[in-house]
Length: 244
Image (cartoon, rainbow, N blue to C red):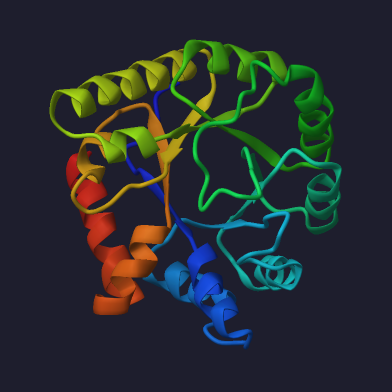
């Protein structure tokens, strides 16, 4: 499976909600940010409803589902509570991610290979509801094999380690990501990537030909404080397009 020339950009709006929740008021509104990102050229909007509701809330998911005209990618832990919420709102896609209460942000990929029995009924229920299932995994052959066994049509490769490294170590991790993308695509899985991507490091990831979508949030929201959300999305879009 070779991805189309247009590399989709999903914009994660979680940290608009983080700023809102710092004051316990209704502003800034992540739904407004999602709609602005959509107008600025985002191909989709990503929102992670965490167990502790530290940023996105249940009401945000309901309002995003009603308001957006681009696909909503609902990031969720592999819990019965989150499955029930996904089935109630029926987003375009559900990306199953690992989640630890004490972490600041997602620290790595889901161990799909070690959780086949737990994940299988969730993947089946989501697929039966017409929700496109994605697994957020490390660029590792075992995890891609697990995605195949689970029947997940999409994997999202964790780029966090790549983003933290530099020099030869980063080049090695980039090769690992490229090899994983090629393996997944060869087996008919659509490949996405995300976490820690910035203006400075996105080009090499965007150039991986099998990738169909990048999901980027924290950096774009942070950059928007200085340049505005439209400008941050436009520049990221331009860098992604130039890499293709």
